[in-house]
Length: 161
Image 1: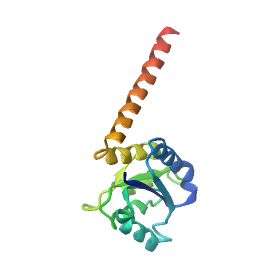
Image 2: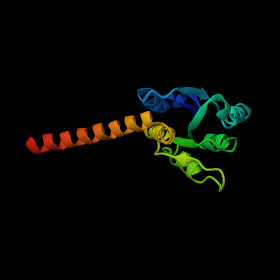
Image 3: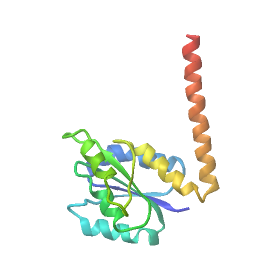
Image 4: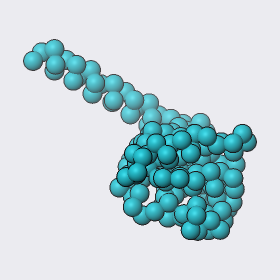
């Protein structure tokens, strides 16, 4: 099974990114986390992305706030799927990061989840890997069924209260 890389622009993003790491681990998907800055370590970020496929990665998740160029920097160096997590910052509540990710130029796509949407980033990465992995597909189906059951139970509890 391919691995998922989780790259954050700063270690201050770890409280958000941790939800992606936890979700990947819960599905048994190997992941590797790194801190690379689009602006402070562009060479290292580019080197990681350009060699990720050869190192067994199938998807890269990139989390960054403010200018949030990390996902685009990584996407420019690989044809692996990149999933961006815009991280809420103190300045514009993550809107700046969201807008920078969803406005990538033609030819360099970055899939983008909600602001601080790390769990969904991990689930999207798992869905991508599950295209060729029946075991992951089954785990995703089981999670969806459990989520459905939990909502229906809450509905029943509400009606019976």
